Image 1 (spheres, rainbow, N blue to C red):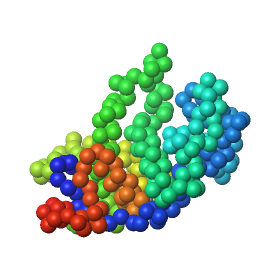
Image 2 (image 1 turned 90 degrees about the vertical axis):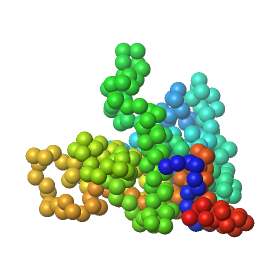
Image 3 (image 1 turned 60 degrees about the vertical axis):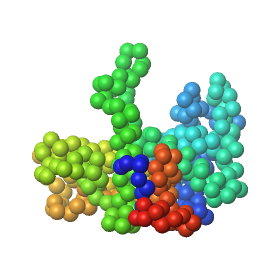
Length: 301
């Protein structure tokens, strides 16, 4: 996607409506609850993460249970710290207090609340490009540093890939001939980043790359849904079963929805447009062009 030509104008939902949506997202609402809970006895480690012995209490506060409860609580805490909802008072002692940004969620304007949500979105997008924790632990060298070469992972390339996918999803959503409010099949989104425009029949190697990209995107969109960016129907787990295993029920290989479906929420459209503007793209909103000339209007079509 080139940043030299304007993207089609998008009709944004009103800011108060978007702010309410942001405040009700699972991840930001959890982060805000943890920020209000933080007090003199709360402790963090050197990286700002909630110490392990306090994670069960945090998970209980959030009403989380099961094997992933601590991980979800830890994620919400990290968002609280990164967005300024929680402020670290003394790094050496590991003490914290509710941050100034917390007041913006309760007493600020809709734009203030959306600003906090955008910060949370950046945290989640950055996390989505990081390999699984088990892979990172396995890649530690003797000095305790991560050997990225053993992961076959390039942080910058991974970030660029996800940015490209999100940019294409935005374009498909706002274009007249795109999906609009409808969901986009995950294979099509993966292929948009890998299959050359001038390629007729994809080779087996290209198809394998698309399949690998789908699996990465499946994990990433699962992470991006709780922050309210997308609505996501994950890849059918039966597709990821071993070839030797018998499926639990008959499967329809022609049902494209089994391969994952994703759509931007109105809040997601707002968030990706903000990121595109920050990156230097011309991403107008309907209404912004009202005082422009005919050339600007035509450029946005």
